[in-house]
Image 1 (cartoon, rainbow, N blue to C red):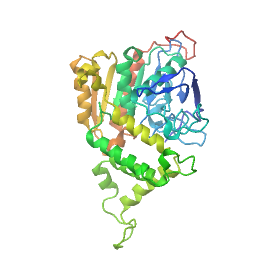
Image 2: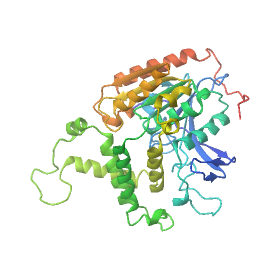
Image 3: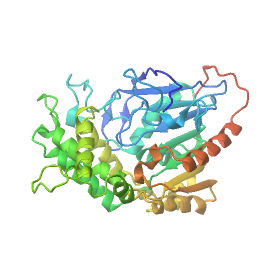
Length: 390
């Protein structure tokens, strides 16, 4: 893995304007932590917003202070598909997150204590509304493109619906127009694992100086299981055991068991992911259903969008199967929208959108070159203060 961007210093936007959430709750003020890569051109026409998935954050490329590479570093940087020699790339940690943006781990200004379970449930629309405040702060009238995979792709769809004139291109990867009953069920099992952990303390575990590690690990094991394909797991682990002989007990014997436990332990102990944030993120996924406001008609829902779309699915992704992307594409075609669709061969299941893949990278690069050709050429790469709509 090459790291051309070097160490990236995150920035924090303090927003004093109250935000009314979909639930009716009001955040009197809030922070968004974000990182940027590349430079904004003179016409502010080269801005790209990356929307992260459930366990993602704002650190999408380059190195952080601990020399950890960003979660999509293979695709963002000089000469990469999302080329920072041409684009000004932005990624923020979602509201309700646990990596610097206001969420359950931050102080509630009304009580002086961490929000914990008192932080209100947020929706995809709430994330988009808060990200729109970041857009205005950065002086960008219109994003050249919004890009997101999985939960990030859902945010891209919400942007295209709620702010159709604020993006030129919408790139939706390994996503769906709403969760299936099976996916909602997976999320509920994960939440129950966390909420029934004795160290959860009804969400006030930080006050008790504990962490529901067991529940978090189990939730991550379940989630990770759904991100991989059956073929990939079979090829990687098969039925291989750690020892030649059966042990006839309930300890770890199969390599796949060891792998899942490792992933769960790592998530619960070293990635510092907050349990209340995990609950919030999965609930926001469950609630995402923009067509519910349009008589459950997805074509009618997307009729107001003006962006050009690229929709990408992966053959072995059974969490958000290609058929779910087909629903999005059909609804866009019903409206004569400019849409490109690609179904990429991959053995990696849902995780494929994060990984290197020659076909995926090639089509991604080609589409981003199309966007580059539409950006005002030869703009000096300097930031200019512009009048932006409020």
